Length: 318
Image (cartoon, rainbow, N blue to C red; front, side, top):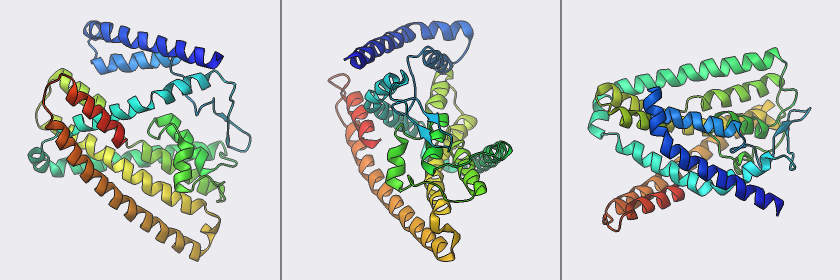
């Protein structure tokens, strides 16, 4: 009952803060001459520092001596996680709407006209981000002789906490991919796995921020279209690369990775899994395209019908 009361109070405080932010953010943006999205991000950072948005995987993650993450169910951050977890459907719906809005900003004709520039910029940013971040991460881990022992589950969870790309339930992701087993590779292999995961995640961009700035500044032109195309392409690429990197990491950390047969078996399994995921993704994309077309054909009245349908569709997609 105490936990429920605390959760309710925190939810009320968060709702009040959001309403207040909606009222004062435009004035703050105008006086500070900062984009509105920057004011929102700053408010989110302040809310987290104030304890309204405590993170954690249901608890406060604490690294143990062997590199695994221990859970502290008595931590106050458990309340924050329960609050965030209860808002997961709204979060999924918002992600879906952001994706639809990002796609609506792109014109196929302009994408074809700027395809070479978009691909070149996206490839350059992605490769440089992976090399710089992964190299820096590996260097730091080697300098401090870390990790002494680590599982891919803990590595993926920590990268997810740092970047916010993985879902809040990293263990569910690991269970789905069979990655919860302890790592068995050498220290250099484990460092490489963590560095690769961090490097791939660093490719991700923020479509919502880009769209917000473009809309607020009423920007238009070749540079704007190229920037939006690069943002969309890199976000698509990071999903594919993270899936592939996860499979490669699993193969590297598997007990049989030291044998040739084990490597070949892991490669075949990774290829089959990737092909199946691409096929299922294509089928899902076709279904979503039909559903989105149906939602856009809905009548404009009653007011809010299309918006509610898009939110529901976004929740379903994510």
